[in-house]
Length: 386
Image 1 (cartoon, rainbow, N blue to C red):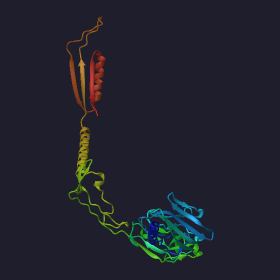
Image 2: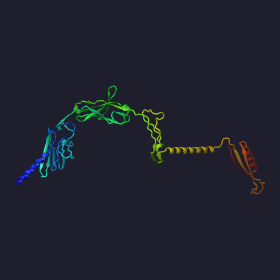
Image 3: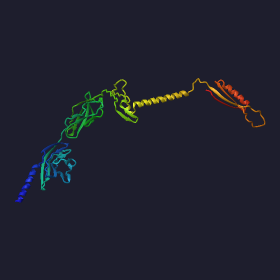
Image 4: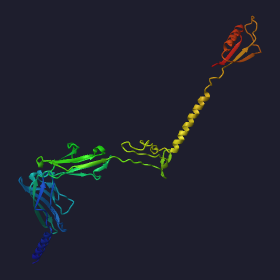
C-alpha cells in the first residue's frame, strides 16, 4: 500500500511540473536569403527543475540530424554547414531560441527544439517543439533617405550626412547621385551614407540614391529626391569687454578689460569698413596692455638717449683748428775737444697757438731752419688740424 501511495505522489508531481513546462514558438517562419533569423523556443523556468540538455535538430533536403547540443560541458555545433552560423543566448534563463546567420536556400526545412530537465527526485522531463523554416529571396525595396538631426537646411561649415535605407535580401548595394538643373544625374559615391564634414554653399542641390541586390534580377530601386540647402554664415560682431575676470600670465595678472574689441565678418569678406581683419588679441600672447605701453616707452627713451649721444660727439663743421706746439730750446755750447756736454740749467719753453691752416707751412719752415742751426735742440709738436 505504501508503494502505491509513493508512486501516486511521484506521478502527481511529474504531471504538475509538466503542466508548467511548455515550450512555445511558431509553427512556421519565413526568412530572407543572406539575412539572419531567430527561431523562437522559450519556456517558463520552474524552481525545482534544472535544465540538463538542449538540442536542435533539422530535417531538410540534405538530410536530417542534430546540429546543435548544449549540456554541462558547453555548446557543440555538430554539423559543419552550421558552424560559425548558429548561436543561442546564455544570459536569459528559459530562452533557448536559435539564431541562424547568413541564411542559405538550403537551410529551409523543419527545425525541432528539445529541452530536458531534472527534478528534485532525479527524474528527467523532456519537451520539444517543431518550426518549419522557409527561405525566400527578396528584391530590394524602394530606398528611403534619412537626413541627420540638423535637417536639410544648414549653415556653411556645418557637418551632416544622408543615409539611404532599403530592405531585401542582402547584400544591398547603394549609389548616390546629384541632379543638376539640366536634368542629368552626377554619380557621387557608392555606399549607404553620403557625408559632408564641412558644408559649402556650392553643396546645395538635389540628391537621390539607388538600391539594388542580386535577388531583384538586376532591378534598381530609386528613392525620392531631397533638396539640401546650405546658407552662408550671417555677419556677426563679437565684442569682448572685461568685467572682473582676471587671468594669471607669466608677465603678471591680466584682466579681460585689457583685451581689445574683436570684429568678425562673413566669409564673403563683407563687413564693417576697416574691420575686415581681426584686431590682434593680446590675450593670446598673455601681455597686458599696460605692460606693452611700458615697454614702448622704455624703448623710445633708449632710442632718444642714443641719438643725443651721437649728436653731442659730432664736431661742428665750422669749428676752428688750432695747433699747439712745444719747443724745448737750450743754448748750444761751443765745440771743443770734450765729447760730453752738461745740459744748461736754463731751459726755454715756447708754446705757440696759431689759428688756421695758412700758418702751418711758415712754422714748419722756421722749425727746419732752427734744427739746422742748433742740432742739440729738441722740439715737440702736437697739432690737430681738420
